Length: 554
Ligand code: GAP
Picture (cartoon, helix red, strand yellow):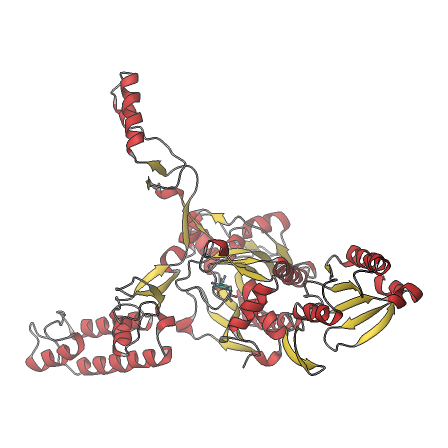
């Protein structure tokens, strides 16, 4: 059980300048979030630490920073255009849309009911003697129970009928077709928005944000443009086809009709991984690293999530930190295990308690289309045990797709031999937003100081957005303020992330520092003027020590 609820976490994050709702002043834009002064510092600390641990501190890792917009062929070859979908169901009363697996009351119950239903149906028809032209009365009765009275489709053979049922079982287990509709209706699940039970069938929704590249595409279609076109035709007394067919390009996005040229379509990348794969050959040509080696990238990813929810956990725009670690395929099991260990090390660096981190071996039917083995590292978030990051053995799926669709060889020539191979990859994929949520959840601590409840963020020093707070004991004593400024400037020069606080009494200042996780609060008092020492108060223990300014700024 988490110490903090999701609502409390979001409220603290907003109040203290970590994370705000995106476009909040205009009512927000669902699934988007803005980072405030403390949030941006925390996020950068996490991303920089990751880069140091996985790129700078290693000899076998190389960074890239690929463009977010990529040639549409990237997403066709990777399978995203065809398969990067989530099952969607609509309330036909208010048109609210939901991701099917998120609106079912109990996913396991749904799946087991589906299996029971199809086991019975397949069991019953498997006992049929081979089908004749018309179903017998007995067959008709059984099929009526499966498909509905008088609605049994015709099949030539019993095997066709069984195959049809099995393909529907797969569809149903992927939350598609009429089955989610039936389940929700039967269980009287109401629309979260309008409260009605009027569900559509479930379909598939591709989560990539589509856009067009270049000025091709959007033309004005209003009467003004037609008028202008006619004048122009009269003016030149030129009625030939080229003139009268000319359309006026128009830059406004409003009240226009779009004529998209298929070739101008692009997508906001839904994962950073493809920018790594498409640069594999470039990096090999530039640096020719020894195998195994990794290419790392950090950056934005975009997914048009059907139901963004749970604070930043499921956002439409988020940040990923991904590595494709290229290996000889015969070594994949050992390399995979090395990465399991490294992921645990990373979680330790983030200060995540071991007992809140769990490995989920993802079964084959739930794995992404490209993966032969996946471990989801789950964390006990305030809203339950959920995926924090993923580790997948992606085989040579992506490099082979690129090779086949571009016609360019993705071969790597093994050094010291003429052996050529297309490397396989192990892919650790880290989401920054989920790391931030896990860090804040783990750091959130409540205790009692002098009989009063205290809330503080026990952030590891290397992640704390602000390392020191500096206060003059009294803000109306110029000599204290001047000395405190001296200390503040010296620390700021050294550490950058230092804050000044002279508001309210000292107790309130400590509480403010605690709530944003400042490890040390420094107070300059009258003794400082005498002996050049300051009070350094520790966030976690609340202990106060006298330390000389020289020692502090060293
Ligand atoms: N390249 C593989 C890949 O993208 P994924 O499991 O879809 O795999 C990897 O995503 C990580 O990205 C997740 O474990 C999570 O941390 C983060 N992530 C994915 N979708 C997200 C979303 N909508 N909002 C925030 N983070 C997300």
